[in-house]
Image 1 (cartoon, one colour):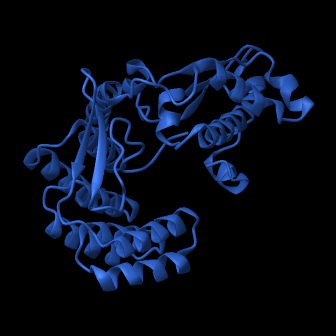
Image 2: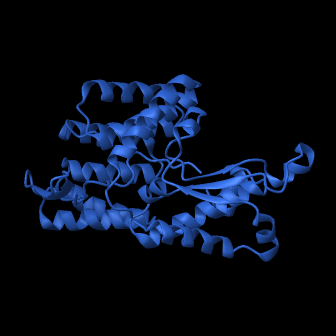
Image 3: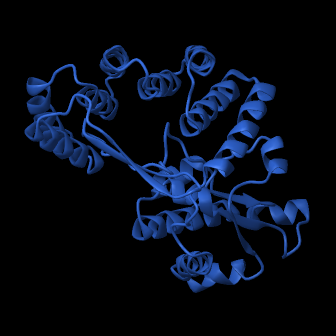
Length: 310
């Protein structure tokens, strides 16, 4: 089960997503440093409207997001924080041209921010233009001094673009780099203790009917931080959330697989990238376990989309 997105969790920095007054908490290895940026602070009322817009987008309420965004736009139409929400709203509303325009204006307002470049690249990718996506990302990687988090996100998107262009060598090159960067970017503390993580996975299996569980008794679940380098060399996305590895049950009689054939991988660090807290992580683990279990029984990605497991 792949993860797709241009940023994921910002493990080593927590920044107010709408404030021009921002605080970032960084673990330098020698201690915690809090950095406050007071450049061009937004009016508190504008910040409130932006928070309302983000919350509405998180909940899928586009009308509420549009109302809150209009207030913020009227107050600070060219502020980067406002333009970021404008771009995200346009993406959610499936208005790619408006999103690209907002990303362009955001980049002009804050030339040192990689965010609008990454957003634009993902927009091109989502609308079937992997070549333009790759061109933009290569320019970003060449011309900008990116922090390790942004570099990892850029290379991950570039790997996806290479895959869609049929450039397997380029895809693997970028994804091996992502694997190394993600390891280096891991926060020192896990979101969930590994023992608790395994319990959550087992609890998800218990939701299945007894007749299904009977077929899974010989299918082990392995919890690992992320895919191995060997799997990435085989073409697996390094940010994959989970993986069924083996022969699906419907194919076993024809292919001669034994009862032990197949195993399910869960990649804890990748799953934690997609979660804000333990509760959201537990839900993501549940969906991923059910997703990979469905693969074991022969479901394809279209089936999983219908089941709400994709």
